[in-house]
Image 1 (cartoon, rainbow, N blue to C red):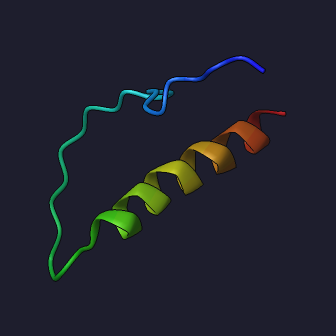
Image 2: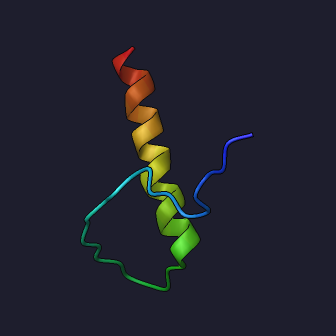
Image 3: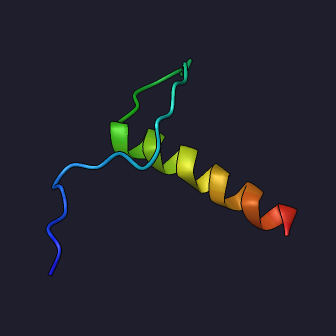
Length: 44
């Protein structure tokens, strides 16, 4: 079995956000990836 690095970067995203109210990191990440997946399916 091959050894895999415990840390690997699949996506490198640089973005700026402006929000009104409290945000948590998992919410932001979910919103980003939810939109990217949605846009990919719309292209098919």
